[in-house]
Image (cartoon, rainbow, N blue to C red; front, side, top):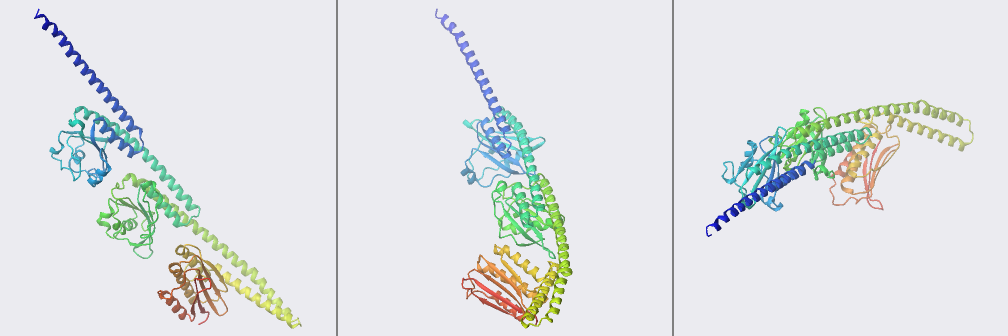
Length: 577
């Protein structure tokens, strides 16, 4: 009886072992099923996104979740194929990342996967020959799993995972799961890049059409250049966009406009950089100058550290990647784009649409210049016709009327009536002089030192709008183009420019009035404003120059303060020496 009881227990024990084994296999199958479901969910999650930055972020998070890793990272290989241009992390707080300092560039163990793009598993990453250790404040890490991510035939980057939870090592199944995720990630990245490329191409086409429409609509050149720089900077993600123009007769460029795009690609509300706008820079030793002289694009991986451009004015700001693209052939305007430090270098994918946009903008600028030239020629022809009609019709009729009145005056016996007729004849003579002055002004060129005084004065007042911030009021009277000698006219234009410049720099005025009048004996230029007036202790070198110029012309300079405040300056010179 005692022997039968142990014998009866043996089948029961065997059955329990079989049941436990079966349960273990069921649990393993269930775990495999759950892991497959998690992998499928990760693949769907990664493939759902079309924004590249979001795709990369989801890949890191999905990889860490699938293998239960505490830390994850994705390094994007740069254009040189040897370093990392982007590095996204998971599992670290913002404070930890800030304490660690600059992101890895692809040295040590991270560079091992760049040089040998094959899956790599380590139980102790510090023992690998390529490991250089960790920087200060970096959290300790032990286990390691790295898998390359391929996009078609190109190694796009690497997925790094460390410290499997519960202190376990990454196994072959973890490697298989992450390798499968990497394949799906490559497809998702390719789709996101294609979508991004299509969107960017659409934005370039829209920007080109916008520039062309503005130019052909007659917008000012400065406004169109700002539009070109702003759109190019927004699309390429630049933080600074500039347009520089060659200075005729010199080896220099002048920064015609500078637009700061501090918000990056989507923040087109930055203000211009007043410290650079209007600055003259040399051709030699600058990125923009090199592109202008060569007539082709020039790229710098980091303008702040590029030995070719030591004379570039942007070095003080420590800028990052930059590109300069000429808007036309050699010697044309140059578009300069600068990205922030740490941003990716301008690649062929960036340059191809940028060059097409620059070419289209250059063509539109040229067409606009030709159109303005044609309009100017038409205007000159119309002015010639008006001048001819005034001379052949109006002056001849007035002259005939004057002759008739002169002959009639001899027949009038009443003294008062004869005097009134004589005054009418004098008025007709004065009117003929005014019309002749107008004819001379119509036929004179609008540029160059030999142009009419009226045209030059109008142009000088117009140029002062930018510095004053508002248009001055201008009135002109008398035979300015016929009676004022050329040398006196030169003094008048120079004095007008100096007076307007002084008003812009020192007066802080909200209104400026300019009066230019030619009488029988003298030409008188009056500039008045409602500003702060002229302090007694202020520097008077500009006023001394104006007084000296008046003395050379035989005239005077008078300063006064109107009852309502401000200042009033009268510059006068005789018409004959």
